[in-house]
Image (cartoon, rainbow, N blue to C red; front, side, top):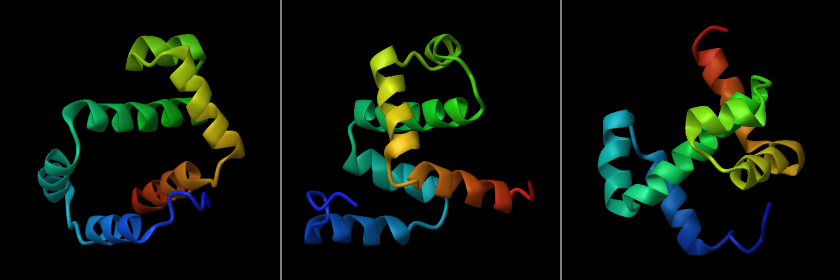
Length: 99
């Protein structure tokens, strides 16, 4: 884990996020916390990660998400050398959906 982001303020933010109960509450909270562009960027990275795990090509991903090849590359690096956060969430979602 990156020690630079492990701060008391980030802990507080994550605790706040963990209190959210459903997507509607997430919309309400994140619209206050993030700019529209920040939220769209986060969601774009998540979609890129899903598509990379589905073995889509960079071209397919760029066309569908509008992400640059630099963004796709960065997300791919996180998938391959990061903390496995995306895969943890993908596995939990698959389990919740009975896959």
